[in-house]
Image 1 (cartoon, rainbow over the protein chains, first blue to last red):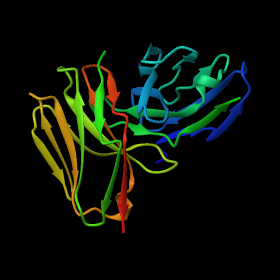
Image 2: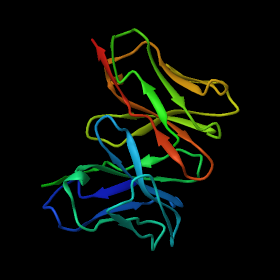
Image 3: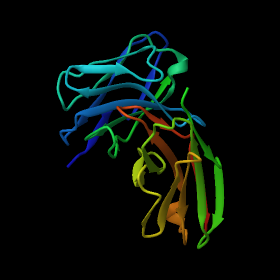
Image 4: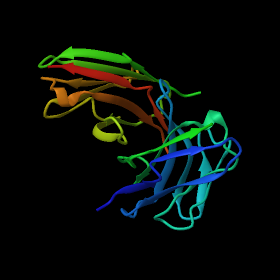
Length: 112
Length: 111
């Protein structure tokens, strides 16, 4: 059982480039979310989804897009990378609103 | 807006001692409080959680207490071991999907 799988693990982008961070889960969870982790700031919610076809903004959504065409996949798109988006990104899934979140291994993104 | 304050940011203890991490939340509607452990290079993993209708929960060396009146909850680790060294995050969840994380506590257990 793979759980939550994120790719890539590391990425370096130039300012202005776009890219997609991939996230897939095999637990049939309805809830999926993307967080960014910055030193001293914990985990901040970027976007989330409560089911296929349904997405919404979290605390820090600017500069990011998401879509949820299937239950399994929840990709995060950076439209035009900026140095302020240098961070570690985590995807998480959960069965319901008040249940344990399962996190992927993270993607360390550097924007130069 | 809603927030969760977590203290201390760094905690160093001797192996075998106890460690306590405290969190305070602002949204009185929060009703689920998980604690996550994050090891280097990995994603956070749930270690214990508590719901608002419970005051205390214990799982072997780990316990969590909740004071809803004061909006405080704490993580207690007894008989600490070097493998307990990690970053610990508290979180408070309000109805729907709103999860607010604390800033994290880096725990060092010295052998």
